[in-house]
Image (cartoon, rainbow, N blue to C red; front, top):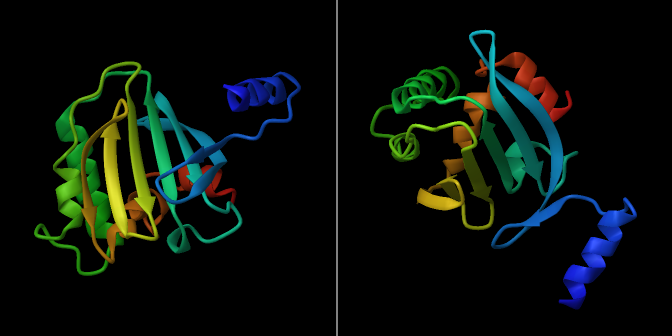
Length: 165
């Protein structure tokens, strides 16, 4: 309780930096941007990392997607497949990355998808509204983020805003 009061006091004085913890690492907020799909703002995306100045591929990272519109399951799956094929070398339908894609569910206004990679265990987990839908443990698990951070990303502007490039 004392720790909570201290954090609340720091927050009220404006000296609290957003830091969240995963199972093994502390993450800091690095960037945030509007999520635009066919010229329509459907929510916001936030990028968190252990060290915002480090390459995203070399650390634990997380993307939080806060939705302001309903989106069907098929839209997530189709987009993920498309951008994984464009950005991940030797990607195929039997790739372990596809197990994450298959976890997508439809979202409603107010829902939060969280995609979190833990570098120490090479684990990628997908959560919807703080409920883990599933995870994979694979040496290439972080390559899933190439949907947003690859050479041909979902949105070049989104990539630039999240990575502060």
